[in-house]
Length: 265
Image (cartoon, rainbow, N blue to C red; front, side):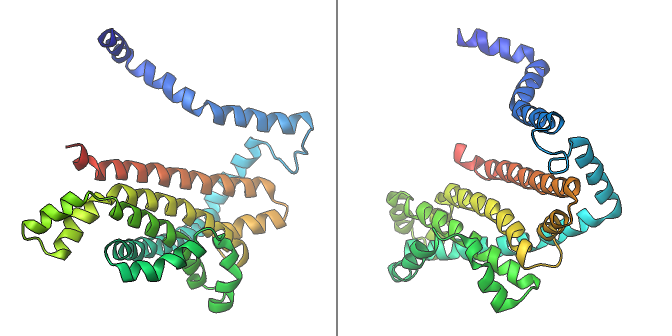
């Protein structure tokens, strides 16, 4: 029976893929229809909630004049710098915590204190320390993205089967080789999950920090457009950065699946 259904599903081929894709994105279509309904019905003023056609026109205009691309590039460069540094430092700290008890005793209380704290609360602090330059935004993104990577790496490294560690050591592997070939590989799924959480945090902190401590960037652009009453352009910038975040998450998910194919083998 399962073979019959499997064969029928494959025979539908391209048509089934279209139906599946349409079903997945149907909530977005319903949301767009509801958006238009709110404006046309007068429930919400069209000045405050412009039509999607106006939003799209503003989006095209900002693309043509280059403002949107320039500010987005500035924001992405900051997010990439902070996230990249957080991944490198976070993996190292997480592995050290898992393998060395003094490091765990030193770092674990700090992680427990700062993990639940809203990272946006650090915006005034980094502004006082570093001013309005790129370094303040990069530091804030780094601090916000660091802890998910540390926690993911630590949990993954602690969850590696001890028999694998003993087997590698009994075969003459050095402690560094065990750490690199056994612990790091075994912890990779949790590391990748932590990095995915950090990726989401990087976009959140990128935009929120630029609301306050920036003179350019997509967050500054959204804030400026909203203050100036240019709501179609403001919504266009919001949708654009949301689309970039969604695309980044999808690409990262593909990368993570490819990186873990060796586990299936």
